[in-house]
Image (cartoon, rainbow, N blue to C red; front, top):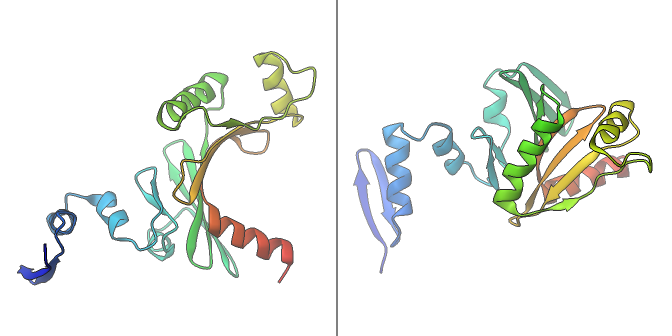
Length: 196
């Protein structure tokens, strides 16, 4: 199939043997796509997170949406959005979103198990990176260790595509779910550790 050019209203459309362009044009022009259409259009989007944020994409459009809190520290930007009782933290390095973390207000074993089950069903078992003291062998003792800061529950999934997921329960953040862009995270960590 060769390439063809045409117009759709005032929008010039190039057909390259794929229906994707027509679908994208329809969704964008009809206004039906909402955040999904915006995510499709964003360059560098590795993964759409929580139907709102685009991991790996430019952070500038989010900064214009009036986040509850904005912190800017040179090459690093942190935005906090309220999502009902939960908080969404969007972290960017050099203008690109490298981490999206949702902090859940409700922190219980039941909620942790529910989120773990959803992620396990979608991405497989993942890897358990939890750390607990020797005495914490039951769920109740593990919860106590977490609350005292002596332990943490953490699972990680690496579905490929340059990003990974971490579900964790710690004293500092409580229950949280993070989506992390691998290369951007490596870059920001290297600069942080390098001190330049």
